[in-house]
Length: 187
Image (cartoon, rainbow, N blue to C red):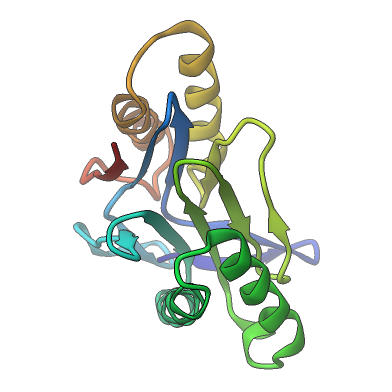
């Protein structure tokens, strides 16, 4: 859902905001709906977050559209093989990503979570489990992460409200994020 450009040898993601958090046994994962190709908005209402495994796992993706969808489908298969065991599915996905020449070229990130765990699967096949349980990827990710951390520390809002507010604030700052917000929850 974004483009990448080379900046001094470093690849940077541009486009989308995916953010999720867990609190008090609940989880929420949300995104904006904008698909950007270069400096042009191609779509306003893309759905980048989904529930998997009978509604017990939340997944969001950022990256080039084709690569992100391919990665999403592959992860869904790993989740089925692991019978819904998120930790096992994430580990197997990362292992495949590192060993498969085609996967290693995918320009995408996944944010996945259930009520107990949150992970980011990176483009190099790394699995990152944030200490605070908040995941944020895409161009607006750092902004949304900062908002969520502040809200967790200073409010008693529910996870869905925090995620919605984080994407809203990111959309007001980041040109690759819009206000067509989708939030999926695990009550």
